[in-house]
Image (cartoon, rainbow, N blue to C red; front, side, top):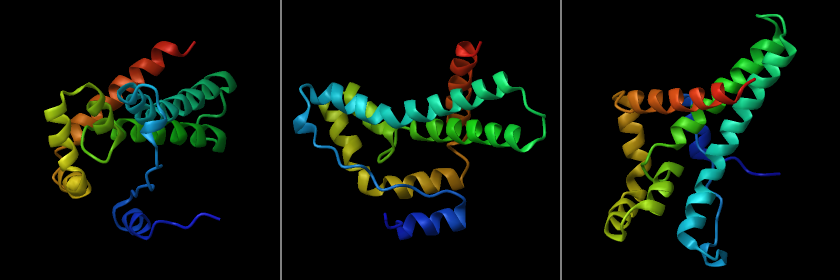
Length: 153
């Protein structure tokens, strides 16, 4: 059985969100580390987007009662996964968006971004508290929702 991250659990309790421990990746095992970094960091975002798509697809196919348990579950599942994908696109370490940025930035900018990693969590909390990230998250949610809407039959 996995042990819960105590800080993540406290954050979830007090602020309504927490975080998972990062999955260790040995980039030396990849043929192209830069491309591998982008693909590995995009995996979570893509997984959240696919889960949101599937929830909305099932909702459309089943067409359950509007306020029934199935409908509510699928809507919440889609909303949560869209929000998680959007949040992880933020280009602040340790979020996946910063890892995607590493893959396309010049080395000197990669170094500057990497130096933020020990403070990234505190930066994110401060920016969330001050509602500075809200427009960026809303933009990412809109983009993800638009992509899903294009793919839904």
